[in-house]
Image (cartoon, rainbow, N blue to C red; front, side, top):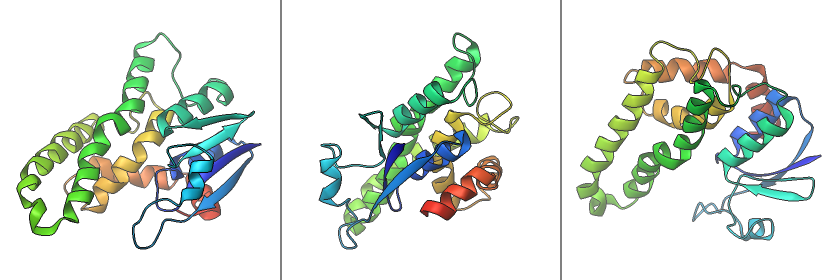
Length: 202
């Protein structure tokens, strides 16, 4: 059985959702953030030296990095679902969005979070952060203007991986990014998503 090391209020929600979409049995080991520092507990370092979540263990192998985990799960267990056929233009698009979520899109969101904790000291950085947010979220808003999913006509691992970015984006206001808001509403209405949240929380 697949073992999921799940940190509360983290991006590991994407992994439990992907497992529910695949219909796979899994066991969740829950960890709680330190209420003062908001950091993961040191026990996670026993699973992987980085001490981060999500991490999964499957067939004795430990996998870290959410994009790689989703790519592995879809490749091994998807049976042709949740990813386009390889060597097609859609597959190239799928890979780009799968890695774009953490490689680029999350950076301005994380900077906004951390810099906001600096108070006045962070004010000089805000214009650049807001510019990058507008750039990345505007790009995603445009990509979803004429489509329901980021790739093809059905949910893929790229949508699952991008979900956290979209959810954080619309949390700050739905009106600015209506296509992202529609995307969030659609994914959160999926039975597998709701089952993952009901079983494992956020």
